[in-house]
Image 1 (cartoon, rainbow, N blue to C red):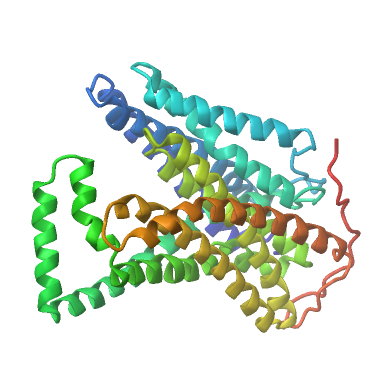
Image 2 (image 1 turned 120 degrees about the horizontal axis):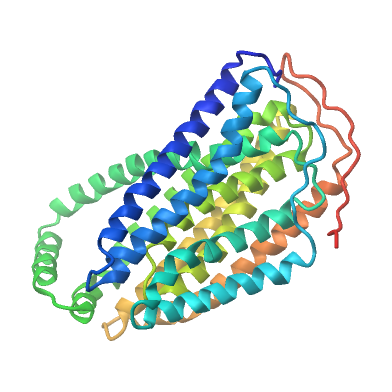
Length: 423
């Protein structure tokens, strides 16, 4: 993009980054203050530790949005930034360090969640250490040896992925799931027997006391093939279709400026990391006694988001430059299938708990037992996919893409970056 003084794109990026920064910092102050006011609550983990953890994550994301907003403002003001090489600070020895930091923080957080007060005060401090290391590891592997230049583009790709992307995804999911909910309600209303059984279930839930009674009440529902089918249709098809199209929003935005598939791959990885930081930070902040299980699983989800978005980014660039739309469609179908499988296994893992002791629930229990191994295998597949694609596109980095769009300059031949990890 030409660094014109009053470029509307730079203005839009600046406004986006500034609003995101103000929202995150303001949100951090509000929820953090709410947590401090409830610090003496009998249920301090829920009413104090979790809001404080959310405040810490809001603040962390806000600080990461600031460089992009500042760089957009500088370019909007006509001031050029340094075009020197911008490599991620990632080395071979960072891998065991990040893994150890992540695992240690998970175990310490689980202990703090189960220990007597005031150990829970560690949870807000530990949440960034449980969220950021797997994201940093995945982005470091995806971008090893890559020159993230110009820096302003990389920072603003993060800003788009952490603000506009999640917002559009949330709106699209709410509309889509709202339509699905309406269809389900109409169907239930046309089935008197089903309507009466759900009405009885609602009454049982109102009078239920404790987790065991709630699980006993919803047990027949979660073993219903109809209910499982509707949930899987929503979370394993509709949600992945929306998220995988919009997560690499920054790659769509900058596609005409990207010359190679590796450019799209790297920018896609940043977009996936930004979205994962937003999603995992929000969900992980609500962890309590399930700290280890929830945040441990979110590490695999982060790997999914980054690998899928990077792969999509590598296909978006040739689709824009060379009209390879069928190739993009194939990659899109692949990442949706992988994402959908991950979500389906997560659903079965959760449903297995409620299905215990229910007639006809043995198959769900069997799937729940398998799902943990399936999720671990998928996480390994995502990592292998990330490494394979990075090596593949690094080797092709000196092959420029054709410029088929009017007004798009032909991509220049560039030297491939080193594909080894620096020590």
